[in-house]
Length: 308
Ligand SMILES: [Zn+2]
Image 1 (cartoon, rainbow, N blue to C red):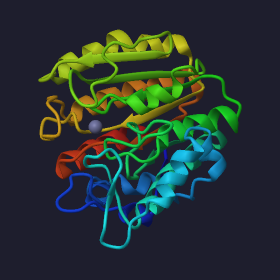
Image 2 (cartoon, rainbow, N blue to C red; image 1 turned 135 degrees about the horizontal axis):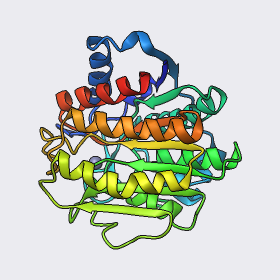
Image 3 (cartoon, helix red, strand yellow; image 1 turned 180 degrees about the horizontal axis):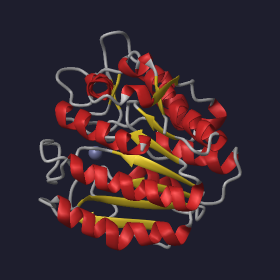
Image 4 (tube, rainbow, N blue to C red; image 1 turned 90 degrees about the vertical axis):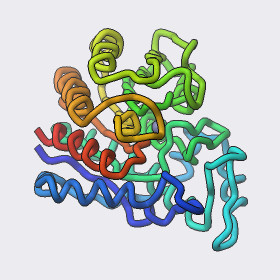
């Protein structure tokens, strides 16, 4: 089965100073691994469009977007969003518009070609960004923009977002807290950055906090016990995946002990649920993952399952 691989050269333009882990090489490492693993022939490449203002405004406040646009620094200079290490540089918005546009295109393509899935190989990531804030390397909430597009432009009424990044998808939770048409399932290290999600739960916000040193067996058990039954019961019309690979044992951004086989297992489970409930409709979006080799191997494994 072919998988749409959606990206844009401008996603490489967003840079932070020094040896920042959220670097353009993340995207190219995944591209290289897809070629090395022989997955390339099963991919259909698509260029990400610019997200439109209408699509952005479904998720973000106008004042936040305008402040970002007004705050673009001079070449060689950087602004920070959260007073920490979420940088905005000269070309960051061009990358962010394409990253969000990629997910919108992925949703459009998948809803037109129900037998296909898509992977958005984009940056900056998105799941920490809320309606009026950016943080955790995220400017716009790419996956939330895609989900809102599925609801508003395509009229879907049940969109599931599964977030297996090692960090809680606090922005996505904030955006959809009062939106029961979205089921949000997030497994994450806790307590840990962004220190959210440990005590919030509702019928459509399903948080699975796990301690540091969680290994593949414990991670699979938690997802199997909590996320998969909720997804089955929800009967999604579309599954979106916040695919962060920073829970890999080689990734020192956090302290999970996952390996490629764990991402393979999870992807297969999600793909099966998509097949049972929504003709296999699944759009996956790159979030974290900072150890380049582990990131590339994990993402390639994830995408390979989607081609099966
Ligand atoms: Zn992360």
